[in-house]
Image 1 (cartoon, one colour):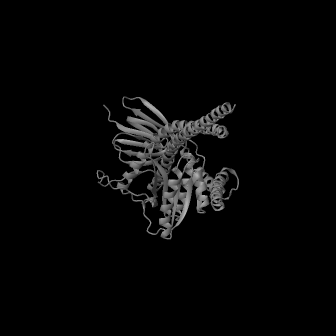
Image 2 (cartoon, chains in turn blue, yellow):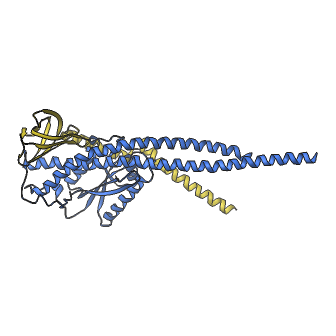
Image 3 (cartoon, one colour):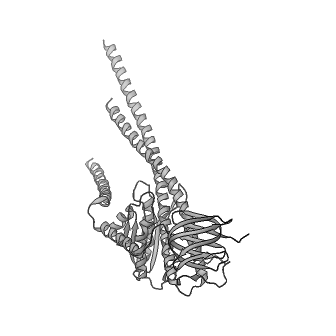
Length: 288
Length: 141
């Protein structure tokens, strides 16, 4: 019976671990539902503001905003990287960091320098180790991120663009495809890439701007950027919860498998001990 | 029957109002404006204040917005409401804070970030130790 006690304590400890992973799975599942609701609640704003921006592209305003103009020479680019605050969510953050690094390497290959802005603790830790130039950082957004939390970080990057310190701005985050799939994405935020697929608004017209085009467009485009980043944050939160749910589910399943195997080993050890005892008794009796 | 237009009021975090209206009165930056259907296209920032909507049939509804942007198209009005009170100084302060956090994250030797980093370094070290032990066992045999 030498190994059986050890096996029993091992089984018990794995069962405890399984209980924890199962609880985390259920917590993540309920949080995911809320995160998804938040994601769909933020969609109308993003759609509406995108519509307005698209209208603007057709409105030929006399004032060309710098965010809408492409800069010929690119010396420095900015990245806003959105990650989760906590781990235990599978390869979610690492896959995204990999994609971000890939995209950064392309720029570095062209001799372009890179600035970061991180949202979420994992990104802050990761890019700290990279020893890059971190301009702004936001952490601990919690389960219900609000626009107020990200305004500061976005403003730092937009100011850098305004001052010509960066010539292009990218957003890296995970996109929620469905519960099982999350896809890391790199989007260009600045300059705003105008899509020309709408043909129904081709005639020449312009808005009345109150008080003037510059004030209105400044306010609008800053809000557009914030809305895009906020969407990224909310998307990423939904991704985090669903990735955690899947990771914890597979951890619980693995724990179940290990418990099964250990149970088998334990039974065998017990059986062997009993057989041994019987044969000892029998041979003892025969000797008498 | 009076003409109507479609009105959407949305904030970044949720949709606030969506429906048809006869008149919309909004607190534009240059003063209050009343919009009837078939107004020409207009784009204006809003001050914090009340948006009054006269719905189809004459019923009035008032919605408070803490600033934002209004887009007017002949038959559609979109109000992009802010979720927070915006002012240049406040935004500036938030930006300063974000910068500060970045600097702290880079220099701070205590706190949670350090813990996470220490954990990852510990994991690395443990993996290296295990590899070394495995190698030693092999050579001893």
